[in-house]
Length: 97
Image (cartoon, rainbow, N blue to C red; front, side):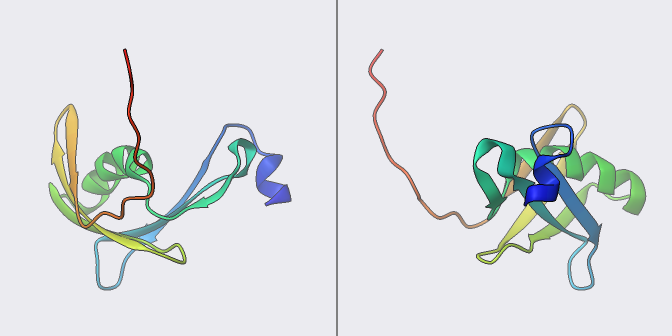
């Protein structure tokens, strides 16, 4: 984590072609107090267009390889991406405006 803190930017995405899924990834952001995010929707907003170009398909299955891990079903939709899968609630709250 010390080496990652020395890099520019707030986060680091590591990704590779998958064996049983289209691609795998991990996301680290130790500069903002997140050594490793278990499943990161925001990083997949970048990864989906990237892997679409590499693999030539709009429907992708991804696996984030953190300790908890997560499988994401991804669709490239031009200016947007669609991400779905099972979720774990880790925080609830109320906002008063």
